[in-house]
Length: 367
Length: 259
Image (cartoon, rainbow over all chains, first blue to last red; front, side, top):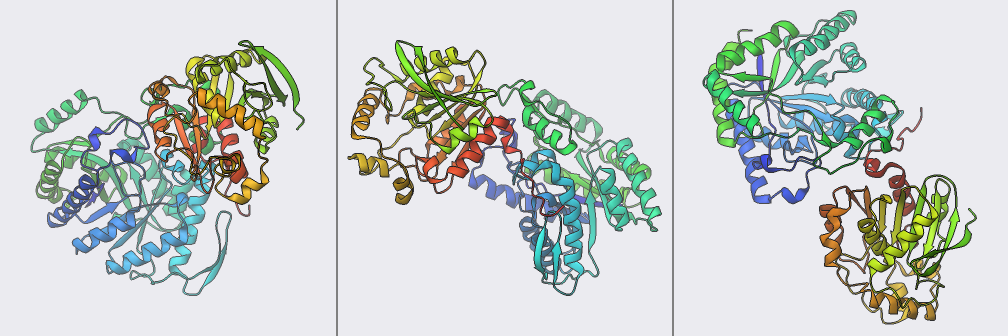
């Protein structure tokens, strides 16, 4: 099994933000953000040193928690500092982006890294639907057409015209050509049946994030079955699980930290107004939504969102066994780890990366 | 859309208003009580619109009774309560927006949603070279050619309104209102032209920071009179917000090119 560091590049004072999304840019101090990105890149370098196989980047907007709205820019900076590790873009939020531009970014990154790119496509969390005023009802259609277009743009050697439902380009001719032929490894991040089926049918990898093991297994079971129907078997690197982790020297120390975290009453990870959350959900599902039936309130009082959850917590042996369960039950071959919890500072993150490299990676290599 | 002219008694004034349309009520407070804009027509396609002529503006008699914006807000709220028993969307432009802001603070039980178009209560600034009626008119627009398309009010109306606005401190930063912005809990949209010469560019963020449920819309290439410079953009923004309130940030338009 392989280990990947999810390079969140969090703003170091992220724990002080108000419980809303978007987070007003007034909270961003340039000196602090410059230092935070440097620290994030130091974490990537250390991850490479201690044996991580991938470092991953993710497109998130309008907050300092994962402030990489343009993940390819961040990835290219890290790629210059890390010379061996795979650079995994997990990934672009396709419904928000021009697919041809995404294809060009991926092709350039594959060249800059001399073939170390892993590409990832996903739709994104509901809050991200607001970023470029994309209609949430069209997110899935845009994701599927975008994936088709990018794969074509990265592999077609002659200029072509694309006459899509959501995209129309009268000439596409992406430069440079990929180093990894015919394609780098591509991961589709999803929980939805039709997109799992898309990944299986197109012989692409699958990414699942933050779900408990049983729910993850329900998804990967479908994926395996549909891959078999499509006439192939996914390899060990084809199933990536992104998880939130806190690892300490012992179980006792890890749980002591978690108790302290709970006492600080952390807010939801992606808090939205209830009205906005329901409007997006309604558009995504096609269900009716009565705006005036939702009680309005203060932005602090009526937000909704997932409460803080940690997938893996404990000492090295404990987290190794927790990770093994995902390997054994779900066939996960790459574990992509978010170590930058809100309340964990840079020094502590570095300590965790080192500990994970020394004590956990040797164990999960055996899975 | 045909607006019907009517009158309602409120706060010692006989307030003239224009009514059109069916649906949820919308109360509009305009600088001169004018209702002949594309915004009024578009709103009346979906809502029951009452466009109030604030006493002392437009063709109404000089208003020597009102001592403050708050006084006018009481008149507007009284008139609105006489016109509809339902909670309403309140829309004000410029001077009317300042009155609407006060009305939302003073009569929160009446106001379901608030739309402020070019309000000047917070951080107004002196418009350059606005000594004459013609200069004042020109200063309202980002582009002189748009000013030419819009009728200039008469010198008499200008003098009457100027006197009222001076007395009510129009164009002076209203720190008391700023201190009470946190009392507005209804969905609120504040719309500003990017080229508005009558308001500091620092003003919009104050509404966003202090009103709990407030969105800011900045209209590119528009001055203080947004309806004059960018009518389509203003209509799109205001109609979308009136329908969707704060969820107007969620995309509603289709990007489908060919099904």
